[in-house]
Image 1 (cartoon, one colour):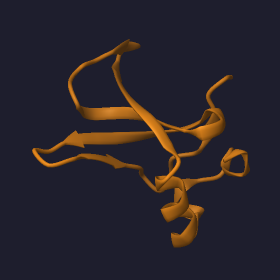
Image 2 (image 1 turned 180 degrees about the vertical axis):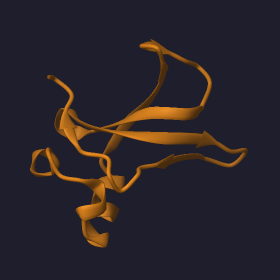
Image 3 (image 1 turned 135 degrees about the vertical axis):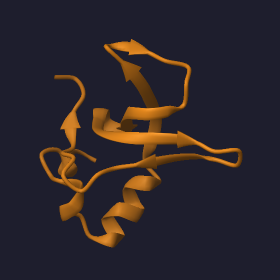
Image 4 (image 1 turned 60 degrees about the horizontal axis):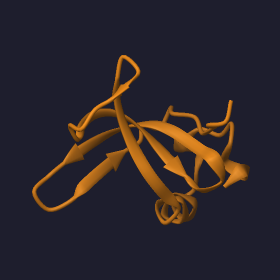
Length: 79
């Protein structure tokens, strides 16, 4: 996953996008730095190897959907 740090989501190939979908380890929804139990809105999508990216989340009746904008950039969540 480290190979994605610094890259824009929109620059990934379809194969890379499918690959990273299998590497999601969690999603955090925050507002003003406080984690929320609500499952809709801006979020941080976490992947293996401390890689994260900003996104949006929507909790439907059937599933939780994470959406990542093309201009979002992967970063190392350790700082």
